[in-house]
Length: 142
Image (cartoon, one colour):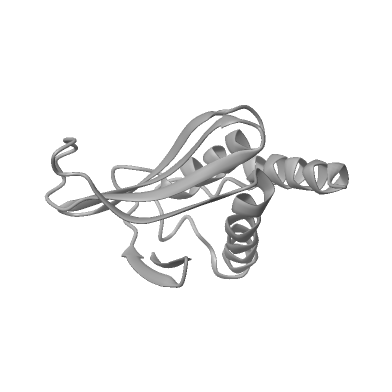
């Protein structure tokens, strides 16, 4: 699945494989976590041999950092880790662009099918729960 990510004016392209990680489900779970409790949440991409982590991290509910960390040879060692992009902001500010992209993907999935191209089913229920969290977070904004 071709995926384009723009962070701080930098465009990163990924060709997401469905093996061995379920990136879409992991991304939905990570975004839900960001709007829930402080912590670290990761969605993983495999582009054999390289791998990438989309890491969301917060120590409180006011700010979240987002980093794309690449492992060019696929070895997940600290010495091989390369930070390719980084930004931070309020949780909703970070989550909204990803959520919008997932909503767009969900609408295409309904029209084109997803299971025929992906090993796991599309996480519609988890995305619905994320949508509820997004709506609650929007309602709590001043």
